Image (tube, rainbow, N blue to C red; front, top):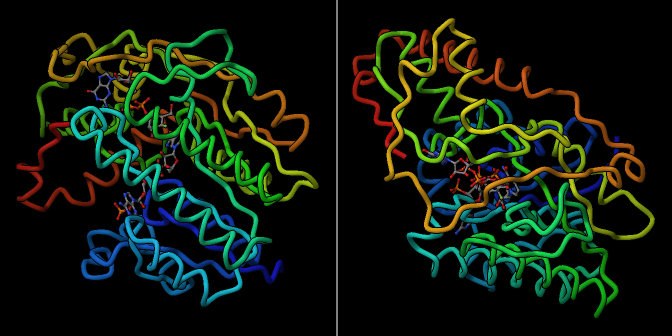
Length: 339
Ligand code: NAP
Ligand code: G4F
């Protein structure tokens, strides 16, 4: 048992739930920073944590409020902090760049400043993203690849990366950034393309939907599994020296290939159901991402366990099972998936 105390921001999200599970398994005392609204609506907001709730210690705080973060950190002697909370949907960042910047940049700055003030020895992980590479300058992308973000979200993550590195260099704190490529799971939000595809495939298979309206089919992503990627986050905080790491599978697939694979999982042809809709195109696109995780593999000893195929299979099967379980519910017929 580690006996260490850890704080996770964004614990209600996809990665937060897998990381909490992983750290509980390692014997950590796991604390989560959550929004007040989450505590007021536990059924809705804690859906990914339902099986863990009795093992977690949750604190209401707002990423927009330095005093609320300061208060939580000052009451507990955290050994590690994983800062995952963010407005994480790229398309939304085009719609409301101001709130994305505010949450993602100031939220990260508040976390770092509060830790420096109260608990400078606490190790800090920042959730950086392959979106920082954006209009990619080399292939595959690695730790030394220059950034060229293509969205307010990507810009906010470059700022968070720079803040994290600056706290490391200026104040000698153990602060690292994971440069994580897309990672998915049955707990992925419905607005992201993979879960939009697998949830709609399940609905089509059960006769609850007749088409999948989607944007750019040619965009390519390096898709891994969130359960694999949270192990890398933890390993990054266990090293002798703080450093930044790319985490990726090294394989890239198009949105079209993801559709093809997900529909074939239920013996359907994607071409019969997919409708391209310009509504889902972005003002600026990241066309192709493929990561080189050699450093994470060699220094951290990290290895992914899932493949692209096992990831898609798990997501489709999980969405089918969930729909079967809910199939008696009349409200299911009206569930909108208009992301
Ligand atoms: P997610 O499922 O969207 O979860 C985001 C989390 O942030 C949720 O817990 C959410 O809380 C919280 N949050 C959002 N706005 C907040 C605010 N204003 N105040 C407090 N909390 C707020 O994201 P994820 O996929 O787990 O990703 C985790 C982190 O990794 C994010 O920073 C994301 O940008 C980054 N990242 C993700 C990927 C990926 O492919 N998944 C790749 C690279 C980097 P509520 O539940 O209350 O909304
Ligand atoms: O699933 P997406 O929305 O993920 P995106 O934009 O790559 O961002 C995710 O991964 C990042 C890591 O690189 C994270 F930092 C970020 O927080 C998030 O987790 O879109 C993937 C691709 C895009 O090229 C998008 O244009 O799919 C394309 N796409 C095509 N049709 C669509 C759709 N995306 C969405 N969400 N919905 C569509 O209908």
